[in-house]
Image (cartoon, rainbow, N blue to C red; front, side):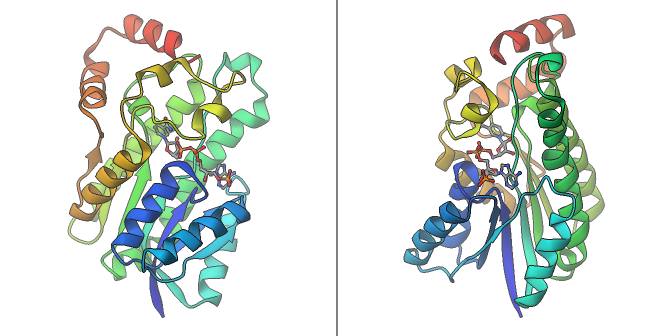
Length: 255
Ligand SMILES: NC(=O)c1ccc[n+]([C@@H]2O[C@H](COP(=O)([O-])OP(=O)(O)OC[C@H]3O[C@@H](n4cnc5c(N)ncnc54)[C@H](OP(=O)(O)O)[C@@H]3O)[C@@H](O)[C@H]2O)c1
């Protein structure tokens, strides 16, 4: 039996960088995403870092059956979850009534439902092995987000859920909610038909910086991590700022 670090959304962006951090710490990694070819290339790079050969599991995590499918693969390979990084996620920009409802519900399925499913499913073995869960939220978690309404709401859920279980599990398992600001990854291209978002102009943090900070704080069991000073300030002041101003500003930059 081997203990593993499972990283969802491990085929690129922050998930890829988190995988390199875990590899440098000597973890055996399980990458989960839809793109098998991209995960294979990342797995090959990880081996060159001297880490054990990663497992790659190609699944669409919006499928409600995919949590059980992942558990079955791990069971077949005699792998137990030590750490779970719920990183897979996406957002869509635009007014709610103009975006395909099925695409918007996919955000709920992935960012909320599957994150919760995998956490509940693997928590017993994570507790047994004194491991941890890291959930990817965003600075979007601290405020409502017109023009990306469902994405912002999904990340508010992730933050609330993570902080609550951090408290419930203290002393038994680590729980960290990583809340990045804008980071140049594949996120913006998927979120916007134009292939970019205005808020990316405010990006001051790279994916490798965010992943390294998140991984380090996760190892220490920090409850919430907001990488970058400007992002920290924005997360701190958003809940204190008059709501009409926050709504107006967020609507402007979420396009
Ligand atoms: N970039 C930012 O500005 C930013 C800021 C704050 C928070 N975040 C959060 O950080 C996390 C990672 O995002 P990123 O920036 O690294 O974006 P990204 O480059 O688009 O990566 C998203 C990852 O999620 C996977 N994924 C997407 N849909 C999936 C599905 N249906 N089933 C399985 N895997 C799926 C993708 O793999 P496949 O396409 O191969 O499935 C990919 O590996 C997300 O939760 C995002 O909300 C990002």
